[in-house]
Image 1 (spheres, rainbow, N blue to C red):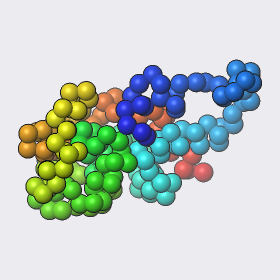
Image 2 (cartoon, one colour; image 1 turned 45 degrees about the vertical axis):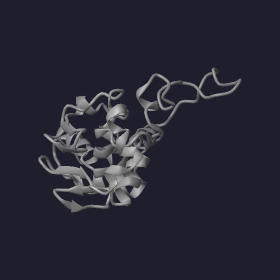
Image 3 (tube, rainbow, N blue to C red; image 1 turned 180 degrees about the vertical axis):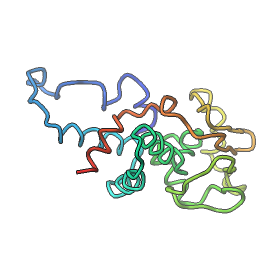
Image 4 (tube, rainbow, N blue to C red; image 1 turned 90 degrees about the vertical axis):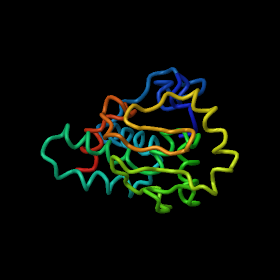
Amino acid sequence: MKGEKCFTAKCPMTRKSYPAGRSGPQRRKRVSEYGRQLMEKQKLRFFYGLKEKQLSRYVKRISGHSFQEDATQLLIQMLESRLDNVIYRMGFADSLGQARQLVVHGHFLINGKKVDRPSYRLKPSEIITVKPKSKTMILFQKVEAQSKKKEASVWLRIDLKKLEGEILRWPTLEEVNPPADIPTIFEFYSR
């Protein structure tokens, strides 16, 4: 996902229901069940910036749950608690790609320890801080001014003066509002 574009009406994933071009508005071929499941899976993959193997691991880890709604909520919690995603949601980065790069370059501390794995799974009450040496970067100096444009997530606590934050609780499915139908993704991987 590129920055804020997918939070507007111009999101390429939801803007048009027909293909581009002169012949676009004509009737579209019917999509098979497999094709529909594949599209939903790809939407979620691109929303979180994951590779195929990463998403399949998350789904297979959860697929043992008997209640589908619990599994859906658990998958969203796992994806939202990734370090790169939390950095992006806190407003320390403009996009998931930038958040991933900042994490890999070691600009963040979790409870005082350096973590450079974007897939690191955070737990509630863990404190995420920008390293003292990194606070002088222009990117982090602009965070406070840019945060006024963004709506803060209610499940996160952010202190822009100290450049730190924490997960207060797990997010709900309604708060995250992913662009994909999650039960369909479980059906895709159960083949």
